[in-house]
Image: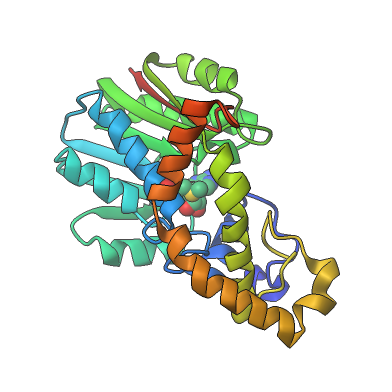
Length: 286
Ligand SMILES: C[S@@+](CC[C@H](N)C(=O)[O-])C[C@H]1O[C@@H](n2cnc3c(N)ncnc32)[C@H](O)[C@@H]1O
């Protein structure tokens, strides 16, 4: 029995390999409310289309692509296809997921490996994607990861860095200074998902709670957002379960839609409502 089985998600620290592995094995990647939902959750779909847009505005080209922290490989494959990369490698430290990702995208190579070290030769890749991953590393490991990305990139190659903004992540300024340590920043783009997170994000959490209960995962043990253990007595009632099922039925199509986060980002910009940037994307060149 592995640690993950033994403690059933208890005491797994945020961002650790075991934490990610547990999220993947317990929730999978198909349900719109699960953690790894790059194909089924509207917000994730929207986030990826935004990253593709940033790359398009930059006329990215080359043969070799590396995606670190590639998870389900959905973004890796989308970038590889859009920009016609020939050698495509994704790296992630959740072995069970890498196996599934590799079988979903047989034309690309997916390997298990743990940042900050990159098991690749120097000066090889034209583009390295590091989307929503480097903030899980400690400060010293973040620096090593940046050096490693720089090492495996060809001269003139690019890094696509993307991060949530905020505590435990990067601030806007930290992100810029971080990438600037090794690269010349050529593009900076921010998105405003606050309105979405504070409205539909709540629905997403309710649907996530329903998923956890269906799979027998104790809420509060696992999710960083759904901390409902003290309401366990209520959660166990059939009234509450029926209520969750109704919400799930009506809300799943909503949280699958990428139009809602798209609209919310536009609305925030237009009417200056919750107009604080929530995500940053930078393209740096070696
Ligand atoms: C939030 S997901 C981002 C997935 C994808 N890059 C995207 O933007 O949709 C973070 C991924 O990074 C992986 N990851 C986190 N820390 C890692 C590390 N130290 N080494 C390798 N992979 C890591 C996790 O397993 C997870 O699949």
